Length: 145
Image (cartoon, rainbow, N blue to C red; front, side):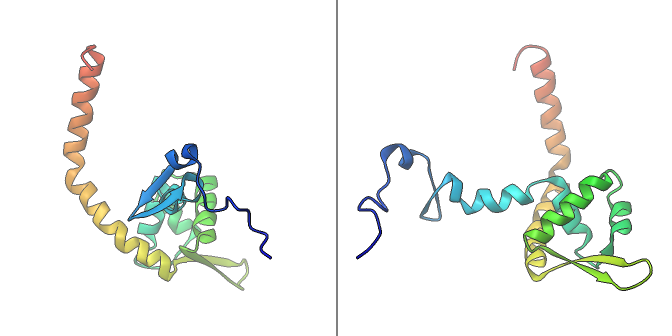
């Protein structure tokens, strides 16, 4: 005898309106893989750290120098988040004092492969985007927006 409810798998009309369809598969907002993955990767610090680690492992202080406008607290938290999600690994060496480095995992390297074209696109289109922002802001400031 099954413990399953007779209504399991049946979606109410209200719930159906909240479903997200990706590549022909339906997901509730809470279980959407795109929201789950990109929600943790979309921040500027995450992408900058992944880019910094793309070539070589780095120590915390080297990452801090590579991304000078990140606070120590934000760097620590972002490194933990990236490690938790499997994008990087932290290695502690038994020296006095202990030294630690960070390197991309295979998952982190595969993300960087997707990220690199976006970074290149950003560099190519940066001037056009800034120009669009300036036009929008000036139109908005004049009350035309």
